[in-house]
Length: 109
Image (cartoon, rainbow, N blue to C red; front, side, top):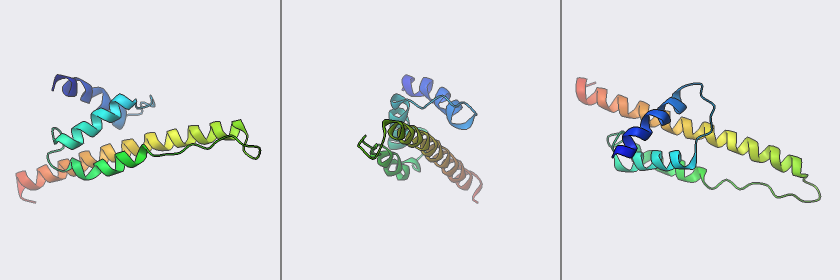
């Protein structure tokens, strides 16, 4: 539980700010654990797990005669940037949904 509490703040800062530091695999695992265990997201997080698990399955190009190593590197970099943005999107969507759920419960909206 301590790891989750201490890991949530830096993860949250990375997700919502202009911090462009790449999200590490450990942080992705922490986010998946938080979604799975309902520690932060109170029952709304589990619906977002398939989205994060699908991100793991990106397949990079392989260098061939027609595809240069430079194109492979560019594609790998683009895929990683897209993946980072998608992780942020899933996190923020889960946060929003959790907050809306809390408002519904608290204020009967």
